[in-house]
Length: 534
Image 1 (cartoon, rainbow, N blue to C red):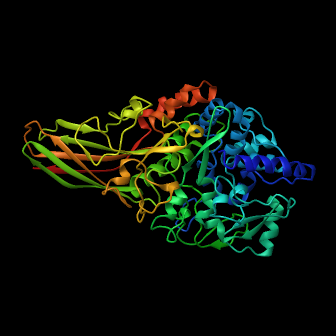
Image 2 (cartoon, rainbow, N blue to C red):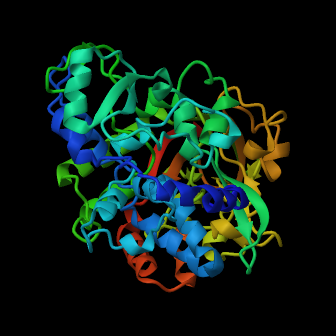
């Protein structure tokens, strides 16, 4: 959010005034213009793969409507009031990109709060603000400096000088002159081939986010790699084999049109579904459509939620009981957890967590031991952080008590070492034991993607996953005993929602209400297993 603040301020002061004096073109169009031709698209097996419909129920389309983001940015501005304008400008770069970049090109700062609620005012700027990460954002990004640190935190290059009617939008295909003229006439943009549009480096521009910790005066006192899925992927075995788009924009099998108006049939068409891990937000957006100015239809948002859960429960992790035995009144068991994703699990925004729910049952089905039960309020039983915001669960190699829970998560700390969920107060990780992807070497990992806490020295915590032991006194219970294990995932942890309430604002109160309303369904079992111990 506050990336390169000093440089940005100097640049805006020196150059934006001259840009404003010149005739600044309209840099973007909203998605409705694109949908006119990029809907009504059918796969060879008769399924709808419309680009516009797939996109508008995604979190890309709803990045500005996301009530958790609205609450979070309001809280950041309240905690750091002297930096409010810079926070809005920087955070808007990824969540309200069309409004922000148009404003910057005109010599102004991007604003967030004047557009909240999004349905209150209908102006060209408000429409661009509400349209989130829209078509003419990603497809206008140039190939310059992609993958370099300068491109991170929304540091991508975009042409701001070419006039309307001549601006390029990039796609993966060659387009003949006739269809170029057709699209130019309909959209005022000229299609051009750009292979970088299918690269992980394109995604990295917003999904590699470096934030800066601020003191009470708004001065920078530290730096935090807040989101790094691209860098995690780059340090894994998947780099060079699969891109972000491979999983998050899966290709249609066979040839299909990408335009319903004279569109030729293309191979390897990417679905614009942006498959991710936020199972909670599509349901919140659906339940509060009017209040959040949601454009996607209810069935589209439901489909997105269902597809998200399906992907999470089939493609993210595996779990196995590798050992289970009772001896001298003690059950010993070992779990092997494998991360199947191309980055850490979980990754990206640090509110996300994965944990183990482990249960031992006697021969009659009675519970002898339980660790990591999910509660209806969104908390985890036994988790120190959910009970006390100043504490957190360490990484465990072995668990022997019910109040010990293996949680794979990032825990942020401010410059004093205190645990925090205020992003612009955080300068380090007190803990980061998120499951590593295949091929990830924690010994050679750069600081931006390093393992922090006890997991760094855990020999069983390696690239591809973790092994964890359980040692449980059986109390003389008659066997055979059953060991059950579940791996749970939650996109917004209990503390990340409830800590927002430290500050008072409409956006904060509203989101906490939404969270409480859906807390009991805010998490999902990724995978489960069981074994019998004699």
